[in-house]
Length: 65
Image (cartoon, rainbow, N blue to C red; front, top):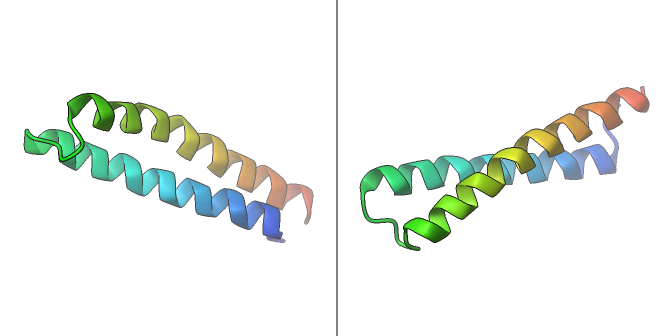
């Protein structure tokens, strides 16, 4: 059963995944709006946040079945 906690983790995972995809598109365009270093940092940070928060959401949902 999905709890508010697992829902929050899932929302964070979705937002971080969108940030990662957006960063990839920005970097591939050649001239990112925020600059290459900033966009690269966003990409590098958003990937583990996406994975970690998704796994935390799944773990929390399984714990509350």
